Image 1 (cartoon, rainbow, N blue to C red):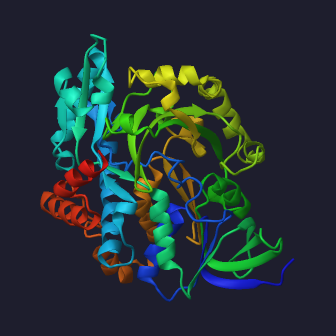
Image 2: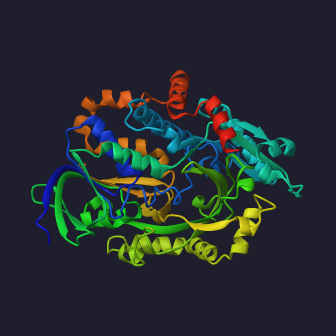
Image 3: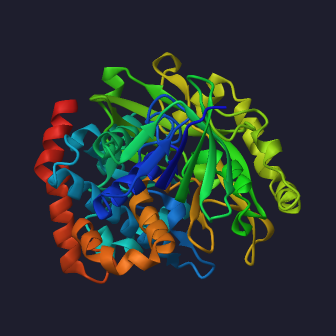
Length: 505
């Protein structure tokens, strides 16, 4: 045991995009606060935020079909698409503020303009896509979206997908040029580089083993320095648990009642990656299809252009999989040790309900490379096995909880924040759209956990995020201003889009 013991205003567990965002917001709002960050790995943004552990889609509901649902009467419910788009606009405004204030530089390192497309096959799916397009384009958030079911037009948009396609089956796509590819790991590192200072201490190779409440109401963390092997004690008034899949165990150790009756279901993913220039140069978009019947929402097949370290590559997937680990660098016992007396019934109920999902995930793990290539060839008919390599992506832990709508042991597909009643601790759980909505989610944490400061902080928040507290959908003028200013700051204007497309083609 080390005799190191410190007191801070705030402790952030995990050096991913969520902690980076919360730390950066707090540095702007209260620069005098002492903040400590503890990260198990050697660098920031190496787990769920890593560029190869997620698809880098700036989730704005422009192409993800599972964010708009067909109702029994045939109409399309776009409420979730609107919500996610508004939340992504909040992230964009904050990133633009950081660039304009010279707090981070070279936005092209973390965000690139890229068309977002949805692609469907079959008469029913084409009808669905057309109805979705009509519903979305009535809304100012989705202006500029195009629809086509003309194979000639689609060949122009997505040559790699359309050439040598023999099927006479109806096919259609929507396309919107205002989409993005985001390298969340690069953005995370930029934010941590910016906030590290006298008041903000970032500790890598430090694993938080335990967390408990002290008599005076502070939170005490038992932290192992993985370099020296010593165990340190650190206390803080407020703790944010942003450790990806590792958050659930720490939430359980905190003992807060809000963390009870919650479980986690780990899902792993794999992608096929192509770096062959003559193939890569033929595709310039993120193209999302529809999930197969029985597949979970996070298994929507998509063919993405990616920009990583100024290099363009193609990524196809995800092929879902199952591993009991809660983190890519986690333990094979993560799932078993997350079962507690207070959540065992919830977990058992979910296990019974989700047998088809578990079977599907295990089948996906067993796929041979050739079987994976067959799925890829539904997108690229002439894809050659030797041009594609398999990459294992990050682990995602879907939240399991009891809900009124779904009953006991309902699997949640989304991002959730669990906060103590007194606001002294908050934990982030779940998965997509996660990173894309980080700024919105962290502002919610600030709102819930520091209500006594909100009146004082609001002017600064509005300076950083001009649309804060306002619906952009209901304020088209503000939406237009926000679009123009964020595009300018982040290098996403039409001219820059065309210039970047040429430089990578």
